[in-house]
Image 1 (cartoon, rainbow, N blue to C red):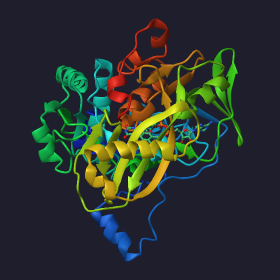
Image 2 (image 1 turned 180 degrees about the horizontal axis):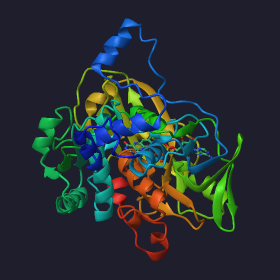
Image 3 (image 1 turned 45 degrees about the horizontal axis):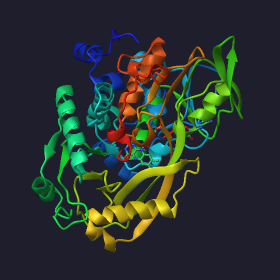
Image 4 (image 1 turned 180 degrees about the vertical axis):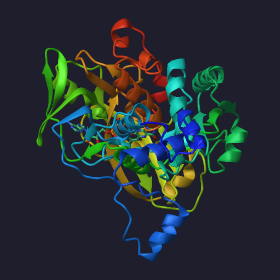
Length: 452
Ligand SMILES: Cc1cc2nc3c(=O)[nH]c(=O)nc-3n(C[C@H](O)[C@H](O)[C@H](O)COP(=O)(O)OP(=O)(O)OC[C@H]3O[C@@H](n4cnc5c(N)ncnc54)[C@H](O)[C@@H]3O)c2cc1C
């Protein structure tokens, strides 16, 4: 794209070059897609109301795959979609297709409890999770799509001295990394969350908590749909219901993939399939240090607003936030055995609810409305794997386990850079696969083991 086009004002050009996101996005859209993306605004809403909302543009196309692309991304979850979007937007690589065996956003991205935070312990994690959290702050504007980001504040409550010490350590580490968190007292917690049981007679008296004021939640489907619409608009082909069944290679290099719609060629292929990662890497002929486990969640019936921060409780093994619809969104720990079930089961949520009722006795009268499960991809150190693989041209982004929703924008941003340049982005570099062989683990078990 030339920045010298005659219809751009000098101001617009300067803003494009300096990376003003909204402008860059809008200008690139003007150039790359034949149908200019319909923008959402109060005016377009009013205009479409006049035609009974029958003339809205489709969010994305459903094309047939071309025989060859520059990059193929396997997996249309949040991470795959964000990667495609940033490949097109930041690197001008638009001859890209995303293949998904189901519907886009139908994996963990559409099944999680939407918690966003960056209060991790290690410097490497702080860098990627805070990049991601800060991108979330401007994402609705960037994508012209309301992802309902709500930085309402998040508390990791501590019910044991051990937890207090661990989270105090997180607070110090966050301060050094420039992330705003602090320890708060039981009185402060009670003020923010009046329904919580902090008293001395409680089974799990609350001793304090780690508070991240700009942590929060966003609407998970909207994150997937916003990135899908943005990527499609930049020329990316999104092909749903098209499972990859083989990774094609020649002399140690990837040359494409096998699908029910035929072979599709590409010199670069990225595996972004979360709990199914090992199935794909088995096809490519190498092993990954990943275990797949079920992780379940549930929502209560909708009620009036009673809790306006996110609360996570490691000791009792549960966490909760209230959705805009009024449902309490509740999650707990992963299943204690490997599986690919992608569905809920009574023992897990019974355990979670029993635990949460200990610190929120008021929940005991609620009815459960829905429960479900996803397949999470766990590494030994609870940190992701992002980067190159033993097969040339084949990249992998996985291992986000129970906590990758919060990482979608940052992960997509650094992974796109990694693919475009064929070497790890500096923020992604520590998360390479070799760390397990070399013993350079990025241990986040306290931050990520139970709570997300
Ligand atoms: C119940 C639950 C609660 C969670 N809560 C949180 C939370 O509060 N906060 C947080 O940060 N994270 C949370 N997570 C984790 C988070 O959801 C994931 O880490 C994140 O969504 C992973 O995104 P992804 O794009 O990598 O994978 P996914 O969204 O799972 O996408 C992978 C895609 O790959 C596709 N695929 C698989 N195999 C193939 C194939 N052979 N060919 C083509 N396509 C294929 C799948 O169909 C799927 O659409 C939770 C997860 C679950 C299950």
